[in-house]
Structure formats: structure tokens, C-alpha cells
Image 1 (spheres, one colour):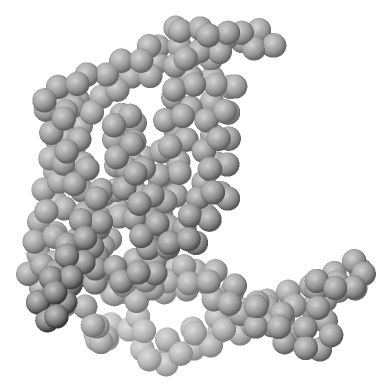
Image 2 (cartoon, one colour; image 1 turned 90 degrees about the vertical axis):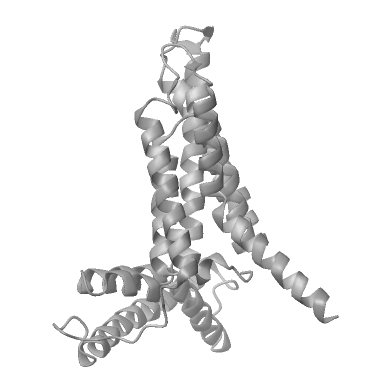
Length: 297
């Protein structure tokens, strides 16, 4: 992962940003909003993950996009613009195709935002935000969020150790490889259970969840965090008011119809700045760093 300046902001700012973008991405089905959210989410995921994020997009997001776009016109036949008739006699409408594409982009946009969330919102940030409010639940969620990457790393260690004992799952007959795989899986389950018990005992010994317990934290709310929080709240209020007033309305059924007014354009601009905030912050920090290096040269 690259050095992400947005990740250095206070956890409240990070959490508020992802809550806003994920909720808005699910609620606003206007094509412009979908395009803005998708481009910003995909660009930010590429910035954070690099080639790994691109591989994930090609292997999972692209097939998900195609399947979601195809399923809607196959099962939904609403709309007034009939393009053809399916073999079963149901009409294939332009509106159902367009809505299927829009819903597919909404789905992969939300997945992209969540992939960014998993990188930026680390377990210590999550525990910091919710440890005092819901200590038990925050600990469980924190352990669950980091379980998958730890599970993947540990299974590689165990597989390499078993390979040294001539228990390689990639060689030999199918039955023999299956036995070796079951052995590795059994070791992994035992490790996961023991790790969970050790973590629970460790947190209990430290007094986690007890009334009046204090905790060390490296997070400090400074002026930059305050400005970012005010900006995010302003964007959210402006966009929500605009949505309530109908500035982001767009109809897919029974016919495609949407209004384009100067007010809606201003909503698109604010929404773009909101979704692109991490990229703008990172570019600003990169520019400052290059300026400092140029001054020292």
C-alpha cells in the first residue's frame, strides 16, 4: 500500500467518510452519481492496492458487473421501450437493461468502497471508536476483520511446514493430496480456536470492557481533522437537502427520465469533491513533498 495521507486523519474522519460514501452510493441511482462514485472508489482502491486491487477488479468485480447487468433484463420486463422479445415471450426493454447496468455499477462501487475501508480502517481504529460504547462487539468485529488476512498468512506457513514433512498438497495422488489438505485444515482450525481463546484471555487480563478503564491511544484530534470533519458534514448536509428537494431524482421505469438543472449540477460537483477527497488529499501531500524536496536540492 502507498503512503496514504487520508489514513493518517482521525478515525472519526475516516469512518464518517466511508459511511457517507457507502450509503450515498447505495441510495443515489442517478447515472452521474453512479459514475462519480464508481470512478472515485475504483481510483482510490487502485491507489491503495495497486496491482493487487487491479487483479481483484478483473477477477471478481468485472464478472460481478456482467452478471448483475445481465440478470435484471432477464427477470425484469418493465419499461415502455421494447427492443425485442425473449424466447419465452417476455419483452426485452431498454429501461430494464439500463437499470440493470446502473444496479451493477452500484454493486461494484459499494464493494470497492468496502475494500478501501478494510485498508484504511484498521482494527485499532475500530476499537478506538467503539471500544467504550460496545466493547465486546467491537472486539469481535475487530478480530473478524483481521481474521481473513491472518488466516491466509498462517495457512501458508502451515502448508510450507507440511511440505517439508513430505505432505505437499500439490503433488501425489488425489486421495493422498486430500488427506494432506484435511490435515492442514485441521491444524488451521486448531490454531484459530487457540488464538481466539488466547486473545480473549489477554484482553480480559488487561481489564478490557471494565467500567472506568482507560486506554492508550495514538490518535489526536487536531485542526486538520476538525476542518475535514466540518467539510464532510457540510457535503453530507448539502447533498441530503438536495436529494430531499429532488435534485438527484432519476427515473428508470416506466420510461427513462431525469432533470438537469444548475442546482443538480452543483450537487454533482459537491458529490464529486466528497468522493474524491482522499485522492485530493493525497495529491496535495505529494505536491508538498515534491516542493520540499525541490527546495532542499
